[in-house]
Image 1: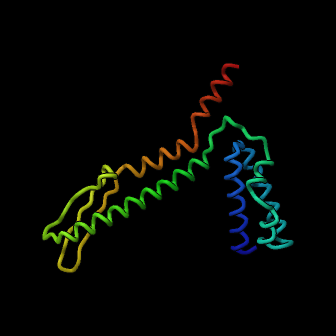
Image 2: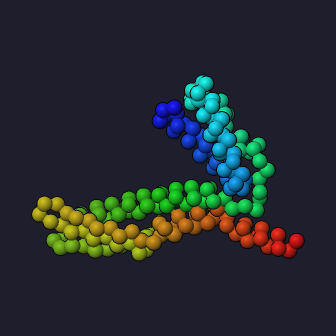
Length: 173
């Protein structure tokens, strides 16, 4: 099995795991299902190749939905992590674009000494533009907003409060 075959198998397994987590399948059961899928794909790759083996799976979403009975009281940690990291990346990109816009304004003012400022929509951030004979330097300190956006997105997507509701129900019975 070459690197491309392993990458296809890993991609299919990760997709399957994400949909299993989204469906609320507990971690131990997900691990067993992942192990089974990886073994089956390894065997099928030896027979028909990884591309045909992965294609023969069909949709991993439908496969995950039919694999196990979901637990509606379980948090979705993988989904929360994926959503949180995605929004963290997007907010960092937005802050970088805002910093470039700030830099454009600072350069347009053609100052002789360093300029320090911050960005309105990104509290806690600070930027310093320093002109020199050979060009300029820019110092950016990203604020806390990007981390807050990523963390809030993680919490809202993962729904960890479901753990406490499940424990309260099991204690009352």
